[in-house]
Length: 116
Length: 119
Image (cartoon, rainbow over all chains, first blue to last red; front, side, top):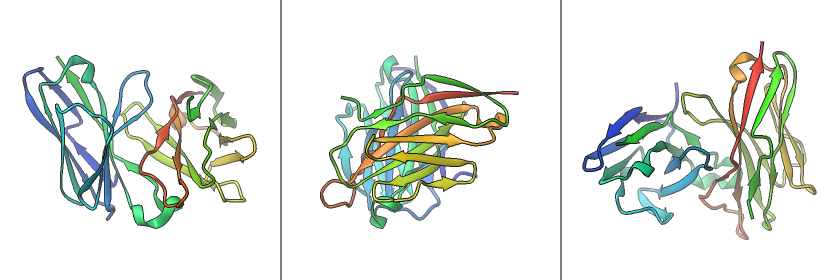
């Protein structure tokens, strides 16, 4: 059983819809991440939250809106997406105060998103 | 320039044999960490093994070992006694430490190698 759970696992949405991806980590970590994985492209970091504060936003379009209400939960709100946003969205968590060696990132199972 | 290079898009290995997946990296930092992840077709990214830039011994975790050659900037993953369940995508990743050694949040991934284990 993974320590990071994501729902839904599969989502199909129209370009005018509003939906949200949910992530919960059970590892007691203090940092959470959203990554995007598109076909034939390396994994891309989208957002980082450290102690509920957003610390990185890698030039992600505003149609993706993250929310981190506490250190265990992370959401990605989606609205007016484009077909090219279809991808696997991976949530992850880590403990950032353990130095470089302890800061292993653990991923969830991912949410497969298809925009039609 | 790519920071992580995995030159093998696909690899085949016979069941019970060992296989080496290549990874080279590029960084000017003295402190960095190297990671390997496995991604089955289901999508989950599973952490396998970690090697720190200051670690003198090659990392090992069960059937996984990391052949770390710092001067050549390579961190190859060796899987011994391959099993059918090892068939998956394998990603090499790096976190750079910077001057403080505290590390950034950015984990840079390679494009991956698809491993297929043949019965």
